[in-house]
Amino acid sequence: MGNRDEESKKGVKDARLDVGAGALALSAGLAFTPLGPVPAAIAGATAPALKLSYKLLSRARARREDRGARALEQAAKILDAGLDIFEERTAHDEARLELLARVLEAAERTPLERKVTALARVLAEGLGDGGSAHEGLILAAALADLEAPHVAVLHYLAVTPLPPEELRHGNGVDPRGWEAGQLARAAPQVADLLDGLLAVLSGHGLIRDQGGVTYPGAIGPAQWKATPLGLRCLLLLGEEIPEPAVADAEGADAEGPRRSRSPGQWGPSFRAASWAYTTRRDGR
Image (cartoon, rainbow, N blue to C red):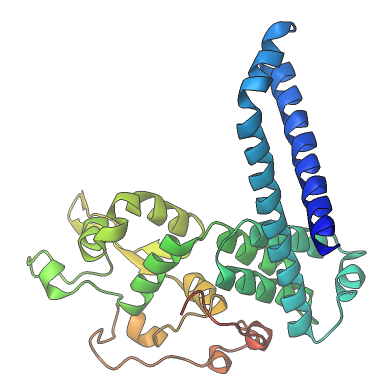
């Protein structure tokens, strides 16, 4: 009896895949070819690929929906409330509703578990008592565009605010940050991606160009440094970061002892809600 049930379930599943593949084949034929015998020939020739495509897309959609649901659950746990709080807090507030939508979209589209958790923290902050949904929208937009390579570069700039002696120009001018070429040599694994990574980070204000006029009439190369907003995103992602006074290239000894701040030391802008829920980092 058990074997029959398994065979029946498999048959239903295969039938659903066939229906889905058939729908894809029909839409592909109607969309890309003129009416006539050609669409049928194309659909027949690509049926296995369309069936596999439908299966993989269904799996990807299910994974995305699961990540969005986990973001909601984590935010509710931070707020110490049930899931109905999201309907209550967004029913008459357009900014909060938009924040909810952007957090769910970003959570669904990332494979990084710590980013799902970071987005949940942003949602909880924005919907919490005294929280700012508009501030949350800025954070959600920044986090939405960050994936593992962006986080790695941002974290590197935060914990190593100045390049080591062997990467400096040797012209007696103290650097104020990292040049792209220096970063490429220090992190060759992302060298080919660096222009794009720096563009995204600077576009969201997570890093700042500390360069400028080096000689009369001469503009020096960009020298990148993590900003307070960048440090905040790292905190939301669960990264340890150095004492900001140490990270500051002006007036601090970059080679001195580094201390990690606890969440409470960051003051009211780093709300405790961000740290009420923690999860293990991806594979760490």
